[in-house]
Length: 174
Image 1: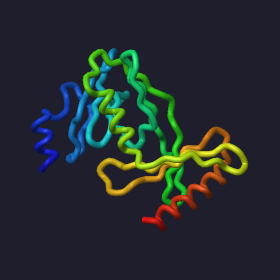
Image 2 (image 1 turned 90 degrees about the horizontal axis):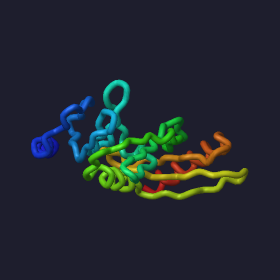
Image 3 (image 1 turned 90 degrees about the vertical axis):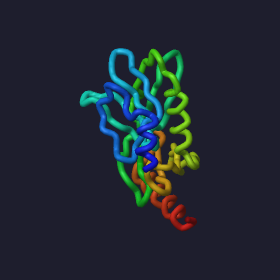
Image 4 (image 1 turned 180 degrees about the vertical axis):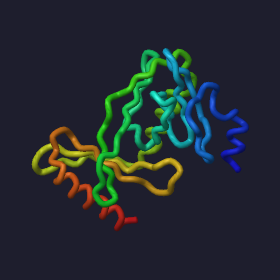
């Protein structure tokens, strides 16, 4: 009921939006991208223009979003593997979106991305390098996901073993 009311109040998706909102999803802000397309921030994530129209990236899968000189730069994380309840991720190349009239979108994106983070810590591995361990809220779900982002050159098996141990410890303290 609340999401239907929000849709009625906000007017739903903006004109020209090529995605399909989920039943419980509502639009928070949007901005047109120079050269075509829309960025649409919703309760569940950020819709990015792509070859098929639009694609939603959950707030927990945006590693970084920065705003400056009329450009919103978004770094998306891709899930590569799992180790117990931990998700090993890797950052994709940054995508840059020039926005002529950004409105509230950049600030809202920043708030949603940082707001999804419960905790984060870097851990050094004995053989060199390390990894970031980040607990993040997944939109539309209860609880948190443990994401693990390795530094360049880290031994993947050592990282998987460590991630599994950390996930187990987190499960024990719940």
